Length: 360
Image 1 (cartoon, rainbow, N blue to C red):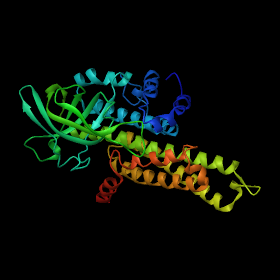
Image 2 (image 1 turned 180 degrees about the horizontal axis):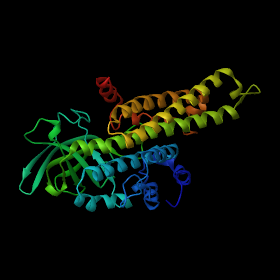
Image 3 (image 1 turned 45 degrees about the horizontal axis):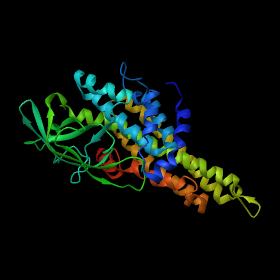
Image 4 (image 1 turned 90 degrees about the vertical axis):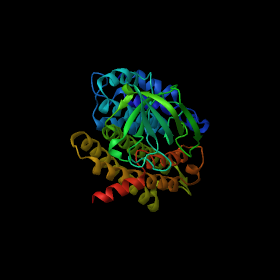
């Protein structure tokens, strides 16, 4: 990497406000990350840099403090390309992963459906054998990067199957006949990315583009995505704490610094303690995911605690900064809108709680 993440984040932060206010895809930021080698950071050698999952989480955390939309694109792309590398065969890796590594191809996931959520069972999207190919039919909804991604990993079931264990993953490129982008949705936060529907009607998927081990594909990439989404929550919470501290130390009311007031000190100490706890849980989850074959319960605990706690930290930051934080003169209101998104992606908070509860 020619530049550190901190150096890149300063450059990325320069256009974060415009990215949000105008709903612009941060293409310059993604190209910059690609040129500096970050898009291949988590991919194993020789394709990528094979950084640890801990370092990956720290990269996302730093990016999120600068621009959450950029951090989210980075997370989705990294998770999907890691999924393909982990579960795909050698020909699929050679054909697709190198493009993901150098940034010439942007990757996305397409698992969620309106009737089933992001689960592996009950899928309506299906594939039917047709000679040397499959016909893919169905609708995926609430998908990130619908407009920007070049390649999607699409979760589907065989037409005559009801069992999640038989699911397949189709590698589908933009421009494939029968594949269209459907309705787009406008979110309250993460406004630098598109999200919406993907439509498949007799979309021809060559057998060479089928990943048979759907569970490995979804779990490997999904775990990386959970790390990334939690790192975004942490980065936003840290940014909110930094802003609140700065405001409290500079703001004077009746000749007294805001930071000298006991009530404000209580809020700041609670925020700082929560951010540190979030960081420790994220770093533990990252190390656990790399060393343990049964890291899923730890990742669920991480997801639940960090994404909920980040919202609480930013709420307190708004209380410390008052009208200043509520205005668009500072980015705190953007942090607050953005921090809701990680509660929804790579398992919603509620499905994570349900999954963990069933394991206890």
